[in-house]
Length: 233
Image 1 (cartoon, rainbow, N blue to C red):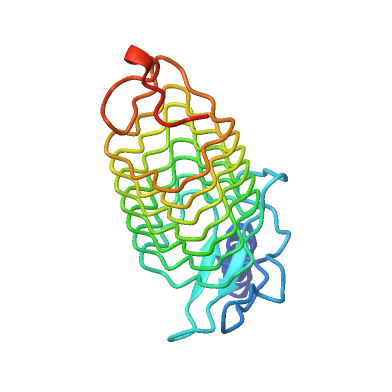
Image 2 (cartoon, rainbow, N blue to C red):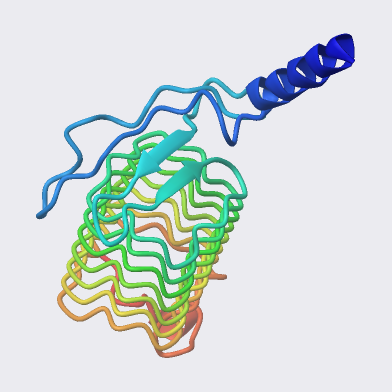
């Protein structure tokens, strides 16, 4: 009986240690206000063994102090992650619908195929982030920094990107239907084969933008059709 009990306890310990969702995480608590968390996101290994990106526990200091495990495919829908420093986090394929990500630091993060519909990303740092094939439809990104971000094939339908920095961003084949880009910086952005039908480009910086015959302008005509250049310089 004693041997059986020892075996049972040992099995439980091994199981706990091998479960990256419930052990080995480092907690980083976000600050209040508009400043990023003082404690950087933990440099913990992701469940898939990838060492380029980070995974680990964070604990929100808002509301009921919920804890969230940052990893590929995580379900963080409607979570409050405001002000956290999640630089280089691996959230590929994550469910981030309606998530509060205002002023969050996601520079260099992996967010490919992530579901960010209706997410609040105002003031977020997303420079160099990989958002390829991400769904950002109806997301709010006012004042966010997406400089040099990879947004290829991303769905930004109806997103709000006023005053957003998209300089040198890769938006090839992105869906930008009815996007608000007023006062946005699109300098040197690649919009080849992107669709901007109905987009609001009022006072946007469009200098050096790359486009091709498959780029659809806000008026619904393709770039280069009858001299139509979408207003790009």
